[in-house]
Image (cartoon, rainbow, N blue to C red; front, side, top):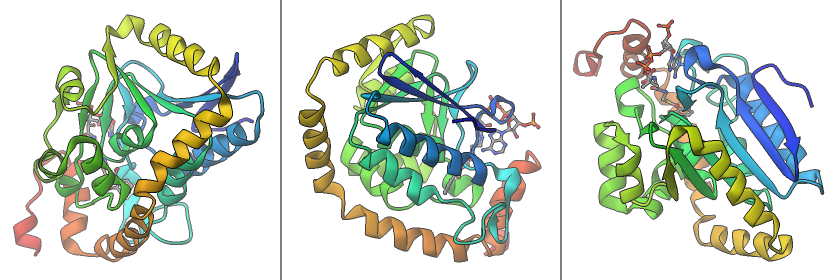
Length: 261
Ligand code: 2NE
């Protein structure tokens, strides 16, 4: 498979999906999302693949979420419907691919990029990684799995803090709140992830699939909240308040939401 916004490599039973837009801290646009969905589906169908690793190019970012420069009142450019990006399908394929998905968090995991690592089965982070949501600062929200599933991972109080205050958290803080499985020095990140992949590849693929689906069953109902949330988001994006958030980010200034309400 060849792509423009991502890299896809298959090695020793592992599919490596790398968001390759380092100039924007690996933010995703509609095309990036479509390519990631295709790559995950390819890994799903490939019997030689037992584990998928999701990461970002370079040493600064895993992913910084939706590309704000591609966002207007109609949502993100490049797609005909919804908020303009098929983020729902990306979330669904990460959850539903019957193989473990590891997030190799090599830097900023922010906004919709943070949601992606949260949805992966496992997260291994460099000690330089930084975590957080930004939606209420840029006039957006990633509702459903982005909010309610995060609460399953770190608890309601912490999830609400993360979403409402839009703070950034260090890798040790992420480990302490159960947001990641392990933190290692940045130079050892790939080797550590390869070790986890090798361990997973020794296990029964069918047992892993059944375990993954049984974990998922408990939170599958969040899918409906996601669908409803993205429909509301489509309307919210058309408001002056939401546009103020996006404009403030692009213009590198503080948003003034209350003047726009
Ligand atoms: C990620 C972060 C914290 C990095 O900060 P720093 O200081 O290391 O880099 P800087 O200078 O902010 O970014 C470098 C370049 O990348 C662009 C910047 O605009 C900058 O471009 P230039 O000034 O060099 O031209 N860049 C970074 N992130 C971008 C983005 N997401 N879209 C477009 N350009 C981006 C810092 O950059 C940051 O906070 N980024 C924004 C994070 C964010 O708010 N993401 C969107 C959240 S909403 C979302 O993801 C979403 C959703 O809510 C619902 C559905 C789907 C997605």
